[in-house]
Image: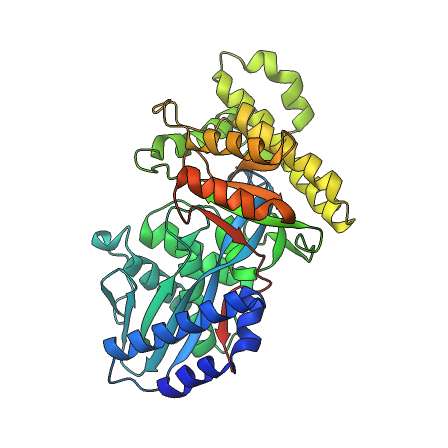
Length: 428
């Protein structure tokens, strides 16, 4: 449809049925999203005045709930798509070029006649787009061009996987327009991971892309990383009286590469003692019996991180079962044990290279002061800096947000809802 028709339809509420699925039905959410989509359309018109007909797409960020640092060992995880997303206004054309401009960033141009890896593009959004287009092309899809403007409220560095959301967005656009939706969510996730690994140059796992592609509340078993097992859940935390909150503790992720790399590398160092590459391949009871013999062959922290993996992998399974049974008390009990294991065994609350910068630990302490010592609160995602996660009773949410914002700055604490769908086209 043309841009003016979409603009007017959004303003009149004709798109509300689609927006409510993504963002919830509150009047505040609806009004904010209507304005957001209208601004995006107007900005697209400014950037690409020659394009009149557009389509609009969205892909969510994600939050990890259980299975902290298990996916890279082919373990299990529990995670959910959230109502923070990246959206794009798109006009398709016959030129062999993708032009994309994101809010706050310059224009990206990807020539589809050359889909080879470019070293000078690594680390850039252009590399992601080229890699996704290349993967579809290798599957026999004739990828055509488009012009697009995107805007995201999945803040970079927030721990909510802005990169995976962007990958899912681009994959969804190409899949819907040029592939007749033949590629399923599992393959969309793998295409995004491929682009990130090969073209962008980052060796990421598959957790983030899988959650963003599937949407909803999902349990994932990565025993077979080519075909991970995914099961969707529909547990309603809001109905149970809790809000899911994420707080950005404003820690810097710079110079933390060594900390992130050390977690999987140390776990793999233990696996190698048993002739395996990943801990998922190692018998847990054999490992536990062998701990005395491992000391001196592996460092102490590696052994403790391996213990965390085995216990955490089982906890992710037990958390999913508790939710399946509707047993929120058992879920929170397991969740608290998981939080303690991340702190004491995995040790990803702060970097040993920056021992005085402990925003995550400070945020967890404050959360317990506000909510009580038994608060359901933990480090979020990779850790070492960044965000914490909390399940906050509804009646305490306003106070919690206010006090966390007072500590870390206005807008630091987000009240999220679980989004039931992954990458989608917005239809009226």
